[in-house]
Image (cartoon, rainbow, N blue to C red; front, side):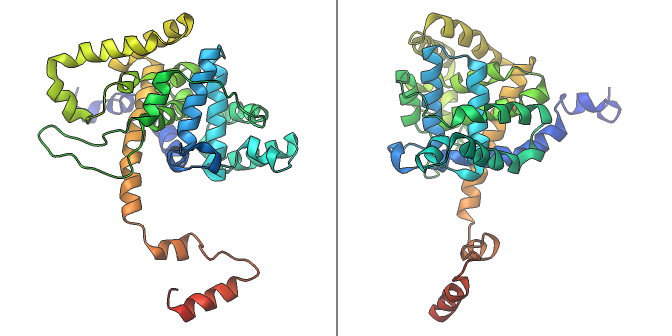
Length: 316
C-alpha cells in the first residue's frame, strides 16, 4: 500500500494527534517543575521531591493508581503556582477548603489542555493535596537517580553537547510518569501502569552514569546484561509485591504495541525534546521579553514610578 493510499491511522501510527497537540503546552509547563526549587527543599527541584515522595509512598503500600492521579494533579496545579502547594497554603493560614479552591483555580487554567475525564480525575484528587505529604524514606535508588545527571542529546561518533544545568534522572522519570498519566486516556492506558513505568524506566542509572546513546553504543554487546543486572538490583530493594508489578511493566519499553507502552513512549520522547527546547529557549531569552511579554514591571500602584526610574536609569 502506498503512503497516499494508507489510512490516517496507519500513516500516523495510530497516534492521537489532537490530544497530543492539546496537551503539549501543558506538558511543557509541568515539566518546568524540574527547575523550580523552594527554601525547604534542600536544593532538590519540586520534581525530584515528588519523585522521591512517590517511591516512598509506593514502598509503604499505597495504591499506584491513586498516587498517579494525586501527583499528576499536584503537577498541573503547580504549573502556574510553582512551589506554592497545598501544605504551603495551609501554613499560610488558609483553610483546607480555601487551599483546594486555589489549587483548583490553577488547575483549571489548563482545562482545555486535558480531556474532560482526566480533568475530572485530577479535580477529585485536589483535597488529598492540602495535608502534609508522607515523609518516609525513599529507596536508595531513588536518591541516587536524583543525584545522577542525564547526558542529554548524544550521537555516536560525535562530541557531546554539554548544557548546564543538566536535569537529573529523578527529574526526567517524574516528568515521564506525570506526562504519561496526562496522556493515558488518549492511548486507552491505565494511569497507574503508565505512572509506574515512567518512574522506573531508568532504574539502572542509579548505578550506571549516563553517557547517552553514544555511550550505550560503545558498551556494545555488554549493554543488555549490564542493564538487566542493575535493574534486578534496584528491584530487589522493593517489597516483593511492588517489584512483581514493576518488572513486567519494564518489559513494555521494548515495543509500542500496548496502550501503556504507547502512552509511556509518547511521554518519554516528548519530555526529551521539551528538555532540549528549554535549553534553547533559555539561551535565546532577552530582557525585552521579560519587560514587554512577561510584564516584569507589572501593573501596580507604583508601576508608573518604576517605569520612570528605569527610563531615567537607561535600563528600560
